[in-house]
Image (cartoon, rainbow over all chains, first blue to last red; front, side, top):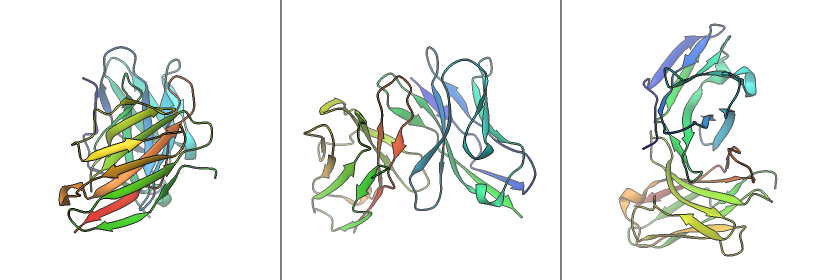
Length: 112
Length: 114
C-alpha cells in the first residue's frame, strides 16, 4: 500500500535561515510526489511535483524538493526562509487511481 | 471562475440533519476529487470522478455519504443523518487531463455537527 510519512509535526526556523521539511514515502513502482501548502482557512496550494528526471525539483515561492530514490525521501527545502512561509505543509503521493495520499502535515514556523 | 469553488464555506448542522456540499471545478478539468480533513490531520480521500463516472468511492466512510457529478461538471457531496464525527473540512479538487497533473483545491466547506 502507498503511504507518506512526515516525521516532524512542527519545524521552527529563524527568518533568513535555510529550511527543510521532511517526507518519506512507500510506493510500488515509480512515485509521483507532490508538496502542497495550506494557509489558515485556505485550501491546499500546489508547490511542486516530482514525476521523473532531475532529482531536484523547483517550485513556487522559491521552494525546491530533492527526490532520493535510495532513501525513499522527498524533502522540501528553501535556502532562505521568510516569515510569510509559516504555514502547514503536506507531502503527497499519487496512488494508482489518481487519488492523492497525504501525510499528516508539518507546521512550519518562521520566526523574525 | 479561475479556481475551484465550494459552497457553502461554513455549515452548521444538527445531528441527524442531511447536508449537501457543492463543488464547482475548474472548467475543462475532467477529474474531480473529494477529501475530508479532520482538525490537525492531512486530507483523507473520499471519492473520485472522471467526468460523470464515479471511478473510486473507496474512501466514503459509510453509506450515509453519497456523491454525484451528473453532467461531468458540478459535483455534490451529500451526507445523510449527520453525526458529530462527520465534523470536518470537506475539500474538493479538480485536475486537467494528463498523467500526474496536479490537483487544484477549493477552499473547502467546514462542517460542524452539533
